[in-house]
Image 1 (cartoon, helix red, strand yellow):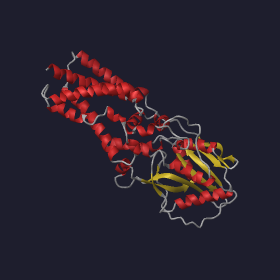
Image 2 (tube, rainbow, N blue to C red):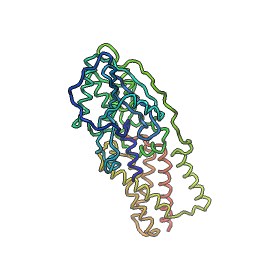
Image 3 (tube, rainbow, N blue to C red):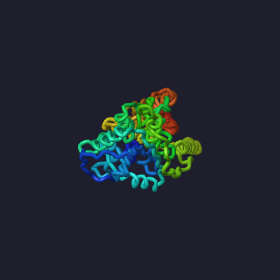
Image 4 (cartoon, one colour):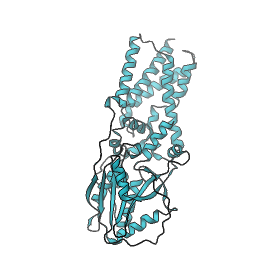
Length: 393
């Protein structure tokens, strides 16, 4: 189960980072920013660690005359809290706004290979001061915590909201057109294919709706694009993009080890071995297949029933990971061939339902990982073997 909760964590921490900032109480008697002060959007490229897979966004306020360089980060969390992964899975782990020293944080990310870019904002002195006040007010202990939604309310969307409050205009990436949340996540998961497979299993049909331009800012790179496209008064919100540090190449496993080729090769080898053995098969193997499929489906049901993450709801993967397959798997272990009618009937319905699912899946309201199809065929094959054996007996 921890494997699945880790997969949830990999999604929930889009753009997040473990909290490093010391707890502090910030008063509202703030100094006026000097004319030399600059406000920037800092964007970190994806990193090798799982929690950096989607990149990160932060707001930097640099004032050389006042002598500070503050980097505001809405994506920090405390990994030392009790039941960390369980609270991740349930969706009740609070995130917070924190502040770090800007240059030090930038150099720390660059040192582990993440690229860092900066877009300075074209804000009036009044708008800079208003943003400074907004951030410091939200940094107060009673304001800094919020309930995280990795698609609709995360470290990047909070920055979008702050910019919109200050400039009084929407911040949106208008280059995003007719693409879903799942499709936007895909490029970031391509180098970690097994995590991608697990995330496809966990996310339901809700993430397959079309993303609106403003919503696209949930990803740091799209927030950066939105800032460069948006306008404040008669000028663009962001100046040109400055690449402070280049990203280092990220490792990727050989594609032959991706879920798709692995599952197809296993299925082909398994069927080939079955044919070489004269079509003799083990009832225990069929029981194991149905048991694993049923247990996984049961996990998805329990997760959806006990989490605040709406992305886990309405999951059509349950059309092939049927929870009652677990009962059938147990039945295949303990019930002798041709002993009970209900098991033969169940296998017949399971095989038929799986075939219908494969044929209809392109038209269902959810996009499925291509690696599931050899698994569905596996369930059909093992079900047909047991059904035929029982019918013959």
